[in-house]
Image (cartoon, rainbow, N blue to C red; front, side, top):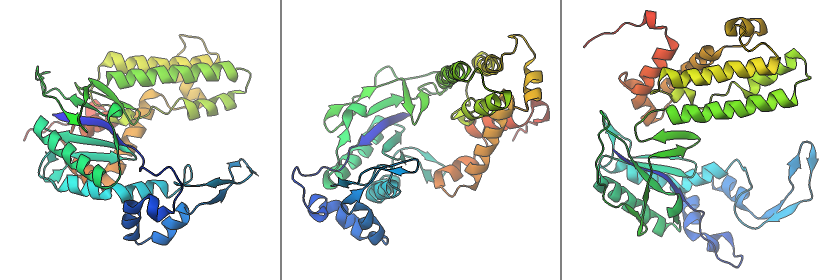
Amino acid sequence: MFVIVGSKPATITFAAKPKPFTQRYPTFYNVLYLSDNIECYLYELHPADYPARWADKLSVPYGLECGVRQGGITSPKLFNLYINDLIVELSSKKIGCRIDDCSINNISYADDMVLLGPTVRSLRELLACCESYAQTHGLLYNVAKSEFMVFKASGGKCPDFVPAIRLNGNELNRVYQFKYLGHYVTDDLRDHVDIERERRALAVRCNMLARRFARCSKEVKVTLFKAYCQVFYTCSLWAGYTLRTISALRVQYNNGFRMLMGLPRFCSASGMFAQAHVDDFHAIIRQKSASLLCRVRASSNSILKTIAGRYDSPIIHGIVRRCIPNSRLVTISL
């Protein structure tokens, strides 16, 4: 399967001299005019003076000539409104990847867009659709941040030669791993790279806490440890890894708590967590996996509903394996 990762549309082009909003962004204004919440959006886009807030203090107001405020609540809504027609057009095409009767040829989040296709030809057609939309709506795709990846089939099979895939006339670079929304995706669909990323990040946070808060009370240390060292970002998505890889992360978690609390290196991990009323490594993984499963099943998103309905999905299978002890699993052959 072929996938385009990290395609980022740049901001809407604008003229050098300040002009009224309807003249600078005529296409965007037409799209906005068709929205039901046009008054709310225009209020956000109206040039005005705004102060910056730091705690309970306000800075001197400064003018905003164009765009929305940094972190404005309407920023993602405006982007979704502007790019929605492209998402609908891509999803309506009978090309790309499909699961059951659901088209999953594009996944968009914020300003990142992923295109999924079983062949090079399908990806070229999807890219042509994106180029046409960008040209008519004043967008420009950042080719330098756009790459493609070829996922290996079962058994590690992968084509030796892949035809060129181009965006705006520029050939895209092929990668074998990519950091998408903070999560490493590899061509073999294994999670070793992402688990190692989390292990290194955990080591940095543990060292920082042990160095800066060595003289704090145990209650403060436990609170800080829960806040900074129990994140395990995207751990509920891990489905393919070895025992050695996950054990390295568990050992780092245990040693980080020992170092912060000043405990002996070889003391009992289960005993120290029980005395401090802190969840151990496996308890955190189970909680986050169960939370993800509940949110996926309760979601109204068509893609998530399709994944939740497929019990042969590697993600669902991995979540169930982590949440239910092996002794209670029953395998049913259909």
